[in-house]
Image 1 (cartoon, rainbow, N blue to C red):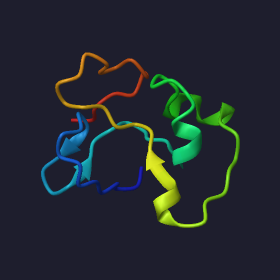
Image 2 (cartoon, helix red, strand yellow; image 1 turned 60 degrees about the horizontal axis):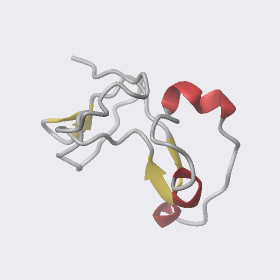
Image 3 (cartoon, rainbow, N blue to C red; image 1 turned 120 degrees about the vertical axis):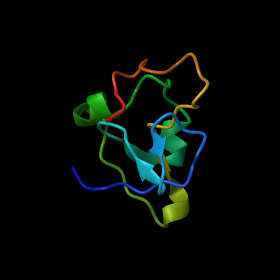
Image 4 (spheres, one colour; image 1 turned 90 degrees about the horizontal axis):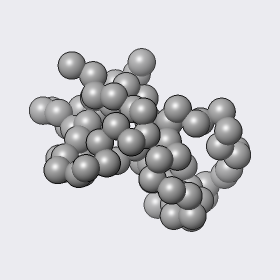
Length: 81
């Protein structure tokens, strides 16, 4: 897997050096992500409709989970060591 850089340090998958340690991620359009439940994530990627974005501001990481959340593992994504 490619190294994913993320600066959101309150995410469960964040690690030193701004590296994402999620086993997989889903990036989508903000407008689509806002309409679907939190548990729709990377394991469901094959069922996510293809979509276009005009700029990076139209996109979001659907895999974000707050470090202190009770929703960790709700989407079947795991944290790599």
